[in-house]
Length: 361
Ligand code: MTE
Image (tube, rainbow, N blue to C red):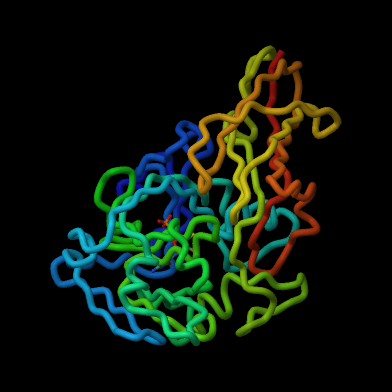
């Protein structure tokens, strides 16, 4: 039993707090990820909030403080919007970094700490406009209802994004996921969805928005989710804050280590470019990177979503190393090897995706 309505073949890294990702084949089965397949990344216990008494408070550097219930937020005062958005955790594919050198205390996420949903809700910018950002405001912080013991002493999960991003129409306060009301594990009753940014900024169980001159100073913004040099130590403001997602891709079908018949085999997976970039090209090799062919890019789900891709290879008997590499629209290519990317918290492994498939015969 995996819990939280996830598929039985879900890979559970931790039961409490619940951290789980889908198996490769499940994630690769559909461009919009079903709810039972969507990864869950939690730093604390999942709160079960009563939508009737829940309130969102907006304060800090604003002309008017707001306190709004769900009915006031979703009842028509703010226009409803919908967006297909891929979330990608900064720790996605960490297992590839752990293979280079161990990362104690961090879960060995595979390629499934990313997924795509159709989110419904309202634009964050409309709520911010109602509060009226003061001229000194530069950052928008989001505070959730969950208290995490990873911070010492424990603290509420919080994160921030620049105000200029927060005002863009794609940044949402979401109450729906794939046409259904948001469920508790994904942030009910209301969460942020920040397209193009690492998943850590899409704060769940949102209860407070604070406009600030500086980024949020809580643990999950100032210490965690920062990229350290290989010899760095996690400490407030050490290294660089992560924000935009780096171009990434991996192979989902067949599975790493799969046994197949020699002959034609379909290979498929995802590619995702963060920020305002999109996927320009995906190359796949069936001989460990010696020769490459371009994959077919599947459904274009809009500017904030991944591209699934597919290609067919004729596999000879024996071990075949299949490799994928993606380019984004700025001509940026994924780095070849995880060795140069290793960092003490295990973030941003966007090295070429590699699997080995055994064709018997
Ligand atoms: N929001 C709160 N309140 N608490 C959390 O632990 N985890 C963040 C983000 N928002 C988190 C949160 C991280 S690291 C990611 S990757 C995404 O939520 C994951 O969203 P999901 O669990 O809906 O897939």
